[in-house]
Amino acid sequence: MNIEWQAEIERRAALHAVLADPGRLAVVELLALGDRSPSELSAELGMPSNLVAHHVGVLLEHGLVTRRRSEGDRRRTYVHLAPDAAVVPAGWMMPRPDRVLFVCTANSARSHLAVALWHRTSRLRAASAGTHPASSVAPGAVAAAARHDLSLEDATPRLLDDVRRDGDLVVTVCDNAHEEIGPLADLHWSVPDPVPAGDDAAFDAAFDEIARRVQDLAPRVAHA
Image (tube, rainbow, N blue to C red; front, top):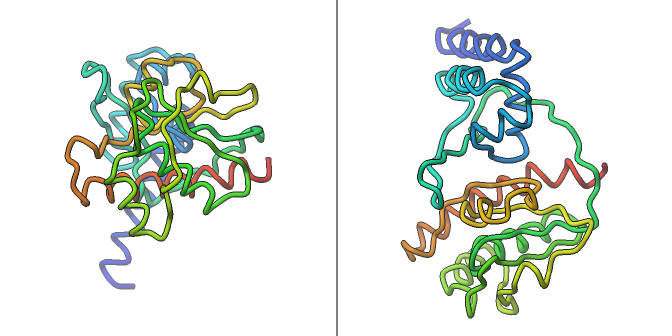
């Protein structure tokens, strides 16, 4: 048994010990599907805010979650499960929706990339919309999709009210949209907006994060 292997075993054992607490495990289970603010965690779990803060602090200390400041309400932060967490929760299946609807503010980049990635991953239908749609899809999003052998050439920004249907699983991929539509959102992915930076690196980073989240969500609804 070499030293590196032993250290990794001890690290993973410590993570399992962290998740042995039912409160922390409940937090991680919720975050397995989407990001939550501490106040949202408190409301969904029926847990006092100070206890939520304690659990999130322990999870942060052990690298199981990270925090990101909202691009909308800068007073708010979102907590999400670290993508390289060594201990992955078993998770729970979601009721199968009629369709997955990805929503951002302008419906010009992240939400269209999410639909393209979803169609590559799942047979379940998907659509996108915006709370304040732009006039066209961002060229950087079209280019990012093309670099990954996907096409957004026919994509058009559309208004959420014109697209949303009963039976949709609504996933916001934009902090502003999430904070605007409130309880209409079933899940939230706090993905930084690549449009202000406008370079390939920003769009590729958004693409990669959305791709990881699509891969996590699709199996949870495909067979439910």
